[in-house]
Amino acid sequence: MARESGEGEFDKTMDDVLQQINTVPGVIGSLVCGAAGEVVAHAFPPLFDLSILQGVAATVADPGTGVRSSAGAFDLVDLRYQDGRIVVKPLREAFLLLLCAKAINLQVLAISLNVAKGKLESLIGEGRTEAPLAAPAAAAILDVLTLPACHIQNSAIGGSFEQFGMAAITPATSRQISAFYRTGTTKKLRLTNPDSGLSGIFAVMVVNENDASSDGKIILCKSIEKKLRISDGASLTVELP
Image (cartoon, rainbow, N blue to C red):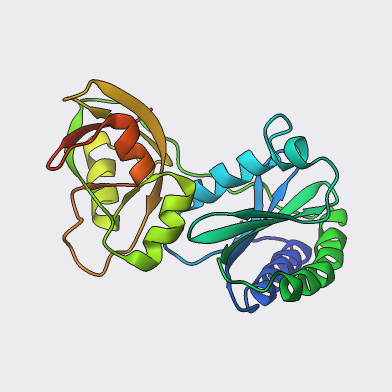
């Protein structure tokens, strides 16, 4: 069904605002999420899976553990990590969230965000936002898939990947998992190390590696390797949570 012209105009304008923010040097991607953490609109590179953005947005908006809980009333929150920064700007009944390079000029960014804030709040206030973006649902588990673990090779992707403490898979591996469990793309996986018996449910990013060496493998960040006590050459059982 075609969208009404007003809704289409809203989406285009919201996207335009985010794309304009992304032109600020050092901004990698941006999104707007509602007060409940639902992703309303986003402008991120293709390597960032929607499910990952949903997880980050939900964490930021969480009333118990999110930024409002830790910072109270605020105009801008700058979360600094080893390889980058997450900047959060509160909006009326929403949040503007940006992933930025470590060396971004926060003063220049703040000027752009103050301009964007008025535009975004005006659009949100019109009440024409479409339903939150959703990831495909997972199907029931028929068997257990086992895949080898590896490290990410692309350093440009690795910085953002490490910040969020997640697992990653290539598009080929994503198709392999989907075919095995007869489901669509899943935003989380239960990973178990048979050697240590340790298990956990982790958010998953779909990344585009330049070669096929990571196809058919689960790419792990350092925090997951430590939690599951992964040794070189280890294989993991991969299940849908």
